[in-house]
Amino acid sequence: MNSRIINLPKIEDPRGNLSVIEKENIPFAVKRVYYLYDVPSGAERGGHAHINQQEFIIAVSGSFDVVLNDGISDKTFSLNNPSSGLYVGNDTWRELKNFSSGAVCLVVSSGEFDESDYIREFDDFKIYLANKTK
Image (cartoon, rainbow, N blue to C red; front, side, top):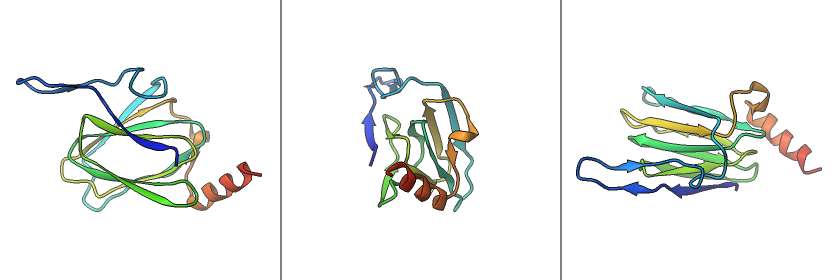
């Protein structure tokens, strides 16, 4: 599975900690940043894969789970630390769930929004992967 936890530099200070996302920290150039918040209890986000884009997902506040699927198996990552995040490569199905109250999910992406880069149905994702390996 093309994903892994990446620890960010953490600068500790009695006034509050600081973490930085720079080109040395993640394996792609940043083209877009967005965040999810006020996610209702029981709601799920994501539910798609990207053909080309890569993402880096951080729980800047609270916690949530990211369930990834590579077409063969699922792997769940529980994010709850603002000084680390989950790198998600392309061709990986992702679902975000189990948001705690007040959770904020920051997503750093390698590409600008492009609807043609999304696969929004899991069955289509499996077909895409099968055709890609032919």
